[in-house]
Length: 475
Image 1: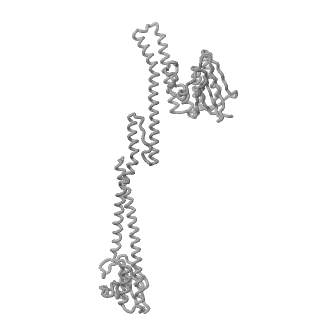
Image 2: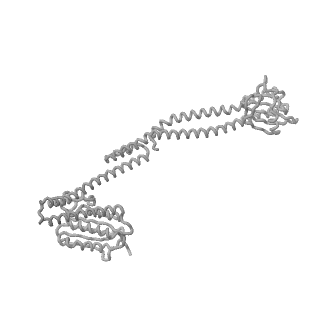
Image 3: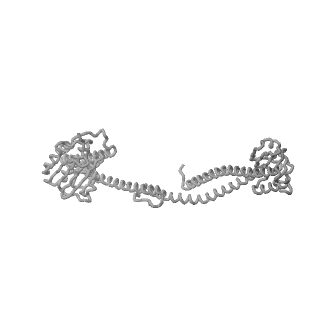
């Protein structure tokens, strides 16, 4: 289930609250154990002090029971514990309540409790019900033996409710801390999430606008100081820019295809309508049917070219299609196929091919198509009586550089980056080249790039040269 902004805040606050509760619980458990241990040490210390006083009393250094009660009272005030001194029967003979009066004198400890403590040993009880106090007590009972052999029991205790009281205070403090932290955390979490959600909301709104065809939308990459969101905003802007370029190319492609299809389709439709309505006499049917046939063939070539481009772009050149062959032989065979066109324009052909051949590893059919398109383009735009050049050379990187050049009109510098675009023609009227579709060089670029090689074009001083690289096989 998708969460809204409010849901994110609720989830974050709940996680913080749960963390605080778990931390508070762990602290309470730790504090409880420490409190019990500290109180046990305090009660034990009071018992030790009382035991020392009792030994002094048994040796006669404390001259009276009243003096013992005074000393026990001082100890009780210092430690906060109550102290009882009992004889060997468990009867209270001294108490820390004070020297004047005490309700505990004469009270007797439970015999079972007395018998449970060996001579010289100490017993600790976290909750001991003593009738003389009327409540559960945390107590330490120590059994002493004087020099004359008499037994004495020293009982130091404090109310067990003291532990609960301290724990209750700690709980109240923890609850207050949790409340204050949550009170501060909610606006802080809201502010942080709101700031982080702002660029995401902007990107969402921008994506909706892009879905409605507005490709010029961008988001502010500096709307947040979070590096990850900045990267996301930059990636979104790059994607938007790429989509805008893709959309522009798509529109140009549709416009170009429509433009290129319009002329032959209009020609075919016009001649067919002329023959059907009698505008064209029957004796001229063969002439116009030949024109219609030529236009149909042009449409067929366009479709085949576009299908070939689509296949190469989708599938690339598989390793199974690559094999070793001689570039010099391929260039020579393609050049021979243009013999009639070359002679018709009285072109001079200059070749510079390696005598030992130039073996490469590639798709021979695809490379043949590249060479054919380049020579066809060079012959087409070469000036009457001009020069057609073919060259294969080795590069410093160990590859072959195949170059096809022609003399004639120089391509303007601003047109050079566009010559490999589909349907691009330097003649904007598109009438000078009736046989071309502006796909030949685009096919060249697609094939070369699918081989992970490079293709270049230069045009200066009346010479235009197209070059591409191919891997070089040795041995």
